[in-house]
Image 1 (cartoon, rainbow, N blue to C red):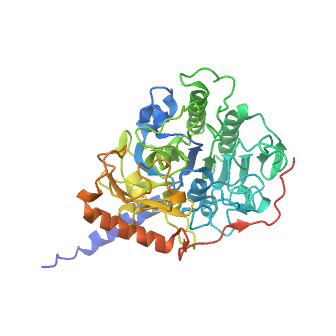
Image 2 (image 1 turned 90 degrees about the horizontal axis):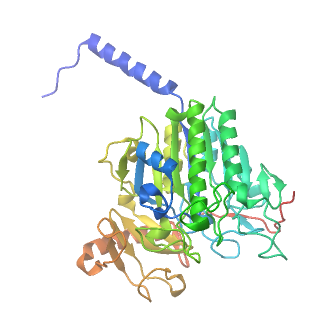
Image 3 (image 1 turned 60 degrees about the vertical axis):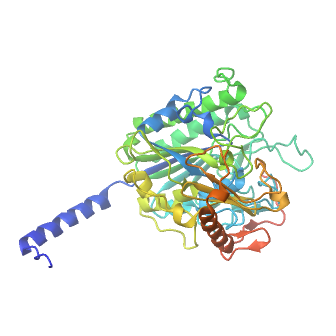
Amino acid sequence: MNPRPAPPIIRVSLLALMCIAATAFATEPKPNFVVFFVDNFGNGDLGCFGSTLHRTPHVDRLAAEGTKFTSFYVASGVCTPSRAALMTGCYPLRVNMHESGTKTAVLRALDKKGLNPSETTIAETLKQAGYATGIFGKWHLGDQPEFLPTRQGFDEFFGIPYSDDMTKDKFPNTWPELPLMRGEKVIEAPPDRDYLVQRTTEEVIAFMERHKARPFFAYIPHTMPGSTAHPFSSPAFRGKSKNGDYGDSVEELDWSTGEIMGALKRLGLDERTLVVWTSDNGAVNREPTQGSCAPYRGMAYDTSEGAMRMPCVMRWPGRIAAGRTNDEVCSTMDLLPTFAALAGAPLPTNPIDGHDIRSLLLGDASAKSPWDARGFAYYRMEQLQAVRSGGWKLYLPLETKYVALNRRTEPAKLELYDLREDVHEDREVASEHPEIVEQLTALAEKVRAEIGDVDRPGSGQRPAGWVENPKPLLP
């Protein structure tokens, strides 16, 4: 039996209320976005994720006032492809940023390759919605003019175009001095690396002060802890931690977080700013090893959980629940479509891989990951090495040259782990769950068909940018 229609006066009242609500939503200020994306920093390096060595009160406060995401992934265990995925919302292999122009894992100084200017970045997406955009720190997606962030949607750039350890003393016959840039101009070469975090922090705050009257996107890919055996920190932090120079740099990064969060509050922007704090990949295996990816197996470079499963905190007062932990699978690739939806910006016309995860950020605790249906793929360069759906992770047989650094068997074979119960991947259970193996193998085949695999181009791949005769950036 159909319910009786509402009387005309009630229908009119309901319509009026809907119009009022729609008008209110339309006039609500667009949120600012602040993304901290530190360099080579493991899950176990933050107090709120279990560190007892590092004092990180400011990031810990973000976690207490926001949500910790404990199954948050980057798309690669190394810098360049991980950053390409965040910028484009795509697997690195889709946009041909899975390797350098010389087929190494990351772009180097004077690389011929870079992020194709035809790709739509997160900065370009937000600019369409009226956002001011700035990047402060390490770019690492191409050092030739056509690949610089100012050609990829960023209004402002202060930082270095590649890793801070790519210095002239390593390859003196070919590499230039490490350039520090403002916009497209080199302002110092080389800069004093001890002060990069401090100077970057000052630049971020100045950017927010200049643009406090309009929505902005501040992307903060800090240069530290970095790839060097002895991370750099300013004298104010040197020798102050319980974990050597690595710990000093971690605590300076936490200081930077506190300074930027304090500026947001001072400027009256705190309540309408979504802050994301995460890392580009796990800690590297330095000698002595100081970074921690605990409780996960492995470190940077491969497809272990330690390499790709990052500490992540998101905070937006009144919108993202405070003090919550969310273990649903999500990724840096999700930031572009999620920010676009929150900003009212159109998505790129080219296909992307990330998902709108507003339900995980803003919904109730029962919201499920959109990655479960498709599967999250773990790539090392052009090799698909594993896939995850729900709590299950399936490692795939690999080409010998692509065997992950932290696998226990060689040659590699199918291995299944229940990550909800076994985060360190100690108990292999493929023989106990053949139906899960079959399900995840089918998901892997779908990923291979679209994104690709070794000697198997995917139908959805697109070219990177290319410069035949790269030239050094000069002051």
